[in-house]
Length: 344
Image (tube, rainbow, N blue to C red; front, side, top):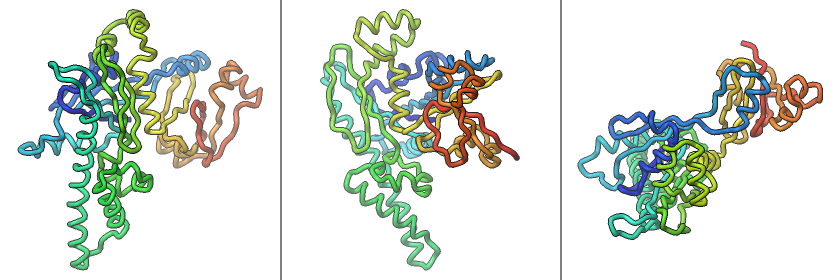
């Protein structure tokens, strides 16, 4: 899972990135104005499964966060740089948009105005791509060249939405379209708005873009806490009344906007978490582990996490009838522990 973090200059975007990176903040890769951090997804269930299976190692799911240091508004004279930055965002699964809600050099925060500016830039960026592609396809169609009518129809629908100032994510059909996915449109991606709130500033409610969600994070404070030991950080969180650290909060909300769940595999060698979209079939879930498993899928042996924990072992869960045999069309549920049987 890859998530791009964007925001206006001095919004605290990089501070949020550092808070999100947590323990990985010291391992951030920075190159060409782009910072990357691969973060392990905290999940207490993995340790429990590791104990049950006596696993040699634990492999959590991971999230890659990208912090891109560019201003979407400054397009003139920065064509190649902007193109490169947008290219980095293209494969992102979702976007985090950071808006400032703290005093800056005597300037009061205007988070709603900042959010509106950023949202408009995403719309304009997508609209420019749509218009260029439509113009080319319509010219080819007039010349009698073979043109995909499906692509034309979807691009015209996209143009209509964007001209209305609406993000492409409002259309589930466009979101699911393989044609639209190929363009890497920014406004089609799930969006989480992070309201970066100062320690002395009150939380605010914003009018969000359609299909977006929002959370408040005290970015500067969280970045400082990320550098402390977990025990020290917990003491400060209690003092400031912070219920949840920034990293698990961001990851949890990221999973929510992407509608992701996790299933698990377990054994002596490894207990591992595998993130998949909600509604994924057993056969497709097998493919996240290896394409051979999907291609040669026979069946899935499934036990719910809670049932396995209550049983105490996989063998005990089998004796209690909690391990089920499921076919390729079974819809995997969050927390399922699965052994895939396949043949190639």
